[in-house]
Length: 294
Ligand code: KIV
Image 1: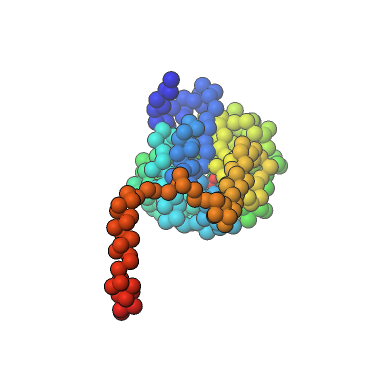
Image 2: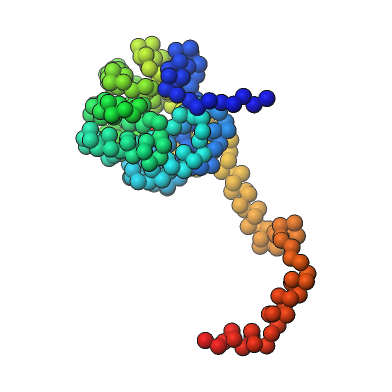
């Protein structure tokens, strides 16, 4: 018997973390990916700015706008019922001022039905997180490899491999926790650094390439093998969906070209008398001449 799942809440996320129950988060960017996340029973869905690359075809997360993210988030909302929905604040939508950050976060809530937002880095982002939380919107932090500012970090590589950088990550995470973030994503951080920090943090740590933590997040297109770009070493493929999709469309193309599709079972019927009457209409002399009469 299917147990009816109740919508995920922030207190439930905290409870899961306190009880040592792993938290499952996945990204989604449209209605089908949202319905798949819903059916699979994940706890949290992130409308990640990785959608810039996976569905919009940009070569990084930097160019995607708030308007574009809202289109994706609204589609995800239509497909989601139980997971908690988090909107990822894109680069340039929150850094300038607390007012800008609150406005962007409110747009996710009001225009797309998000329950929380995520922002990247410590520093000024800590002030932005505090302001958004004070405005009544829950915030998830994100430290370690922060793709929006990857060039400042020397590219897409693991972070926290020196004591100095691990200390910076710790300071950022503690500051984000202190201003009230309900969870923090750790991306591309050595497992031992994550383990040491999880001990010191009260809020759940959601890892991606960060070893075991309170929860895990993966990019939908990476875990299902839909995205054919370069994927980081921490990605585990749970399916090869792109291969299947390419094979399916290729078979369709081949069948159209060889006239094996469509077959009788793919067509609609019409009453023979109606067809006959229609044919009589087409056979009219006047119809043939009227075709050139303009
Ligand atoms: O945008 C995204 O998908 C993310 C995850 C990698 C955490 O930020």
